[in-house]
Image (cartoon, rainbow, N blue to C red; front, side):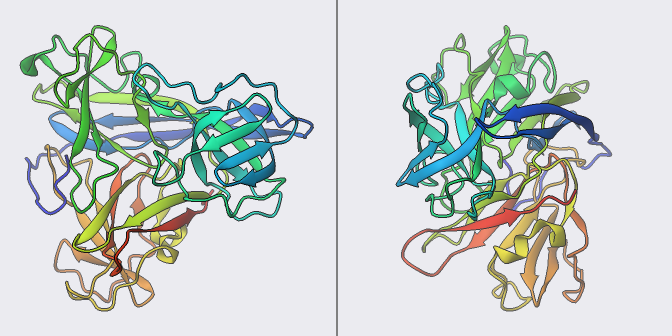
Length: 389
């Protein structure tokens, strides 16, 4: 895992190469009884160096499997227009290891709603266009209600990214030669998304062996079990750990649909006695963003002073170009007096405003540490991130 308060690891010259390109609008999708829309498609490559942990996220969505408009919403139910002839639980049949494989996302507020970019795990569906979805405290989802969705809003159904769809065909990993500790090579570590507090531990760890992803943490999984279906949420990162072998430099490459609409990213704050709540994040955009472009200042709790006690919400970055495992924070920022200030590394004047700095790099994961909210229950705020392209 990434130890946010402890800087460890070797400090050798290393590199991460990220290439992002756009393919001319090549994917067309159609909402029932609606016009045809064209979305751009992109590709990326990200190279993770040897003997290192690299926090990586996916800058695109997969291709939509269904596109339509909202007819009605109620409770946790979204009804789409056109009475599509779905099969029962077509979008909610669990994968072999129990993962729900699809989510529905609002892609346009054509009906006057305000939730463009909100996504929800599909828990079940019927045969006539009704989707029953999970909220923020019920699996992977970006909002805890449907309040900002109106009839006429556009929605897409996407497959979640998985281990098998991101790290596939030898891309992004070195295959292990066996199932024992000494024979495992590239490992993919998932952070614990439900952890309360700071420095979330690793929830699950995998290695690739004999044509499939195998789980070695938590212990007890049969090494013959295939975990290609392990879900990666759109707005999270995973850690690619290349272990001791000096030649274990890996490159993963993918292609997907460019997100041209705002996205909503949930930010959780914990109640006392937690000190703070780390949200493990990645922005699914194929472009570098500054603090100013990101819109994050509208979703964080501004600091009251530049001192340690006066700092509230913090952005913690990790340097994928630094070689080493269990690396500490490379930079830390907080929002104060209408600007983004840096507190780590130490020595930077708090008068310096980093709002125009390119801090959110393509495919790079980070922490958003929400300050304890001071009330007796956990709270959720939403970061609305706009495209800067």
